Length: 615
Ligand code: GCU
Image (cartoon, rainbow, N blue to C red; front, side):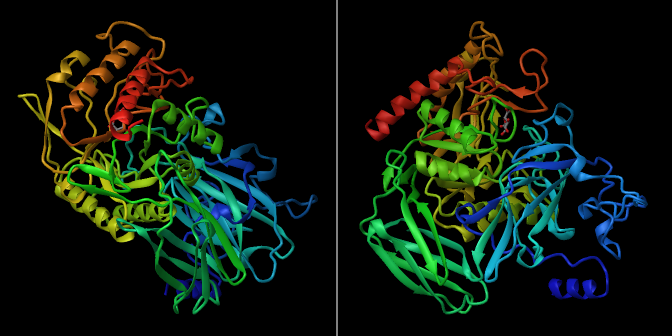
């Protein structure tokens, strides 16, 4: 209906009808034939949004002509009597894409508002081909235009954005894309107005145009059946005019699996196949198989690992064997050149640090990380907790807020569903108790399970303490989750000094595996004192020693992701000596220095690896 209305409006000379809504996100899009649009984009800073509204605050793209905004990329038609045009992308400065704007220019460090980006590119459309414009992420609200026509608007700073642009490309091959990116925070958004991370704005992940045949494999799930290492289960989805009743071949040559499937009227083929010879994926042995899916003129290959994950009482079973999740939390930030991770080099550095620490597990907080991070975790053998930014005081009773959260969760699961490393979907972090919050969060749990019943569902739960030094974890949200996870900051935010925290015991309501989602404390690398000197490395070291002692009393303890791998930028952290706009709970400093506490955790993980992996 929406499309018909849009078309009628368009015919009546109103604003250009927005392009067809974004298709199903192409699975493993970077694996396709792509034209990269990474590099230098011209930009215009626009805090008053003059490029979007006229002086009566009417949106140009809603006017009769739909013209007048910066997205026209207008140029004077003649030198003699040039029209008044008060912008010019091509003579404006440049920003590197991918990359947040905050870290690219000191005047943009704290900037919150709109920045317009523009990139010209040559691409002549070929008959029988389709073209998709794909953004890995734009924080936070993006309006996207191709050759002056609006493709659509997207909210959410950490999930992919995609438009079928086949019919919008110029036959000449000369094209330009304009993006209005606005990182302004709002109480009803996801995340809400208040977080403990930097509000890095802009086109922060890769941009490319993906090419595909007219009918192609748009989506697929190829994983082990739930808790069954002997069967493959999943589906293949075609998109295009000839998607119905088509033959699709699933080929895993190394495993001796080759099966031809038939799509239904909607272009979908589901399957459940015996797979007795698969070598299972694990952190110790991260085996990946080349999985080739082909149909008609299309073929796509993805490196996929196969493993099972489940809980049994207070055990977490990976491929049927009880494990301890030796983890660390991390933001999507390279601390050495503070800003969003910009590419595989940054990501590989972060995961290499985690491996050095002795991890078999990482918590990618507090929002969907780059798809490339999940693929690297597959390759390097790291289990992953992936999360949506339902963080702190979300607008629980706003239906649009819930729809936004659910859309981000769906896109996260779509992006990560073939990644063996991903074992946990987290629906949020440290959200204050209350009935509207419980309804919101349990609805997300239900949604996650409906999209993927093969992985564990979790969240960082709330806790409360009693005068008898008992830490109680009985958050009702825990009822619907597979893990009991919570953030506890004994020795930093409460409980006295590190030497005093071993007085605490835990009263946990649920008979489920306990995976501590956060603990920690700040230390300024190179600042030394004794174990009572807050902000010193010795204080953080003593905190880790005593945290580990305290947590080891929890019978069902099966993992942890201390907060956090590396110092990261946060506006809440403004102590001029110890913080300077950085949260210093990193085990590694913002100059790459390993603090004393790094070695405490590394030693503990060596012990746990011996105990559980027999290393
Ligand atoms: C919270 C929160 C983190 C935050 C940390 C801190 O638990 O989950 O995002 O950075 O505590 O206070 O340092």
